[in-house]
Length: 371
Picture 1 (cartoon, rainbow, N blue to C red):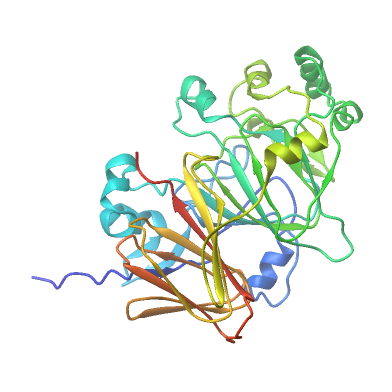
Picture 2 (picture 1 turned 60 degrees about the horizontal axis):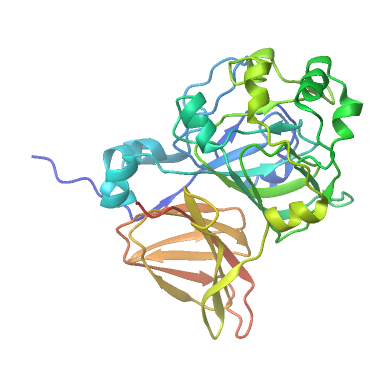
């Protein structure tokens, strides 16, 4: 009889680059230590995903979008495979009873070299009733930085909404001037947090590096079919449906920039603190039904009790270590690991402890508590 396989409480996550219909990724290459970093067609790293990527119109790739964790004990190579075989250990029994072995959210690192095509994602209700899918695609942006010489921008919601029939004409005829006239840009800076509800038309601007956490789907309606020579294949524009079907996805509410900021700009709230560390809530159950995000900032080691849920840990500033029991995982900026629900506590330690400072930073992404 073979001995039980060792289950690590801390699982280092490998870069998992995914093809998208825009260029970028140079800053991801730098975080990954690539010798000759460059922009290309894989501008996202899906660092917390049990959700396959949908790239209709492109040649299929096996397991595209499933987060890679390397071959643990020569056995598991994706986070999905690890969770599938050990859901109670990694996700908790309550989560398993609710969602099985699905992570319950999708997390990415995203680096744009161009403005993305104007797009929108369905709400959870639309997905349930019209797409036979349990999840929409509400998103949260945590801005890590903006490329030198570039003004970081996003576009959120209609400032000057068209009538539904006019929006249909604009998309069908690719009247980009009329499309652009519906929106005003919003400047963004490192450290800001924005939430994008389903239905809200939006675009991410050139040069923005961010953590993006969302409902675990890849549903998207793309309104622009070509930007800077990057063409969205016909199969990738309307979620496999038609334009008339997709017009129902959009929220046509007029919103000024002040309205958008009031709806979508999130302010972290203090959860706990110590002499050289703070724990803040970035987004919680009051704004999302799928996930929550917390932020640890520390100048010296701090220990937090476990929550009984799996936790994706992302080092967003500085370098340090994460410890669970006797296991220690070192992380640099952009580094990621997954902590099992069974971990009773996690310790976060900066590489260079500084009394009175809080220079190291980690995001903690978890599924929402099971109902």
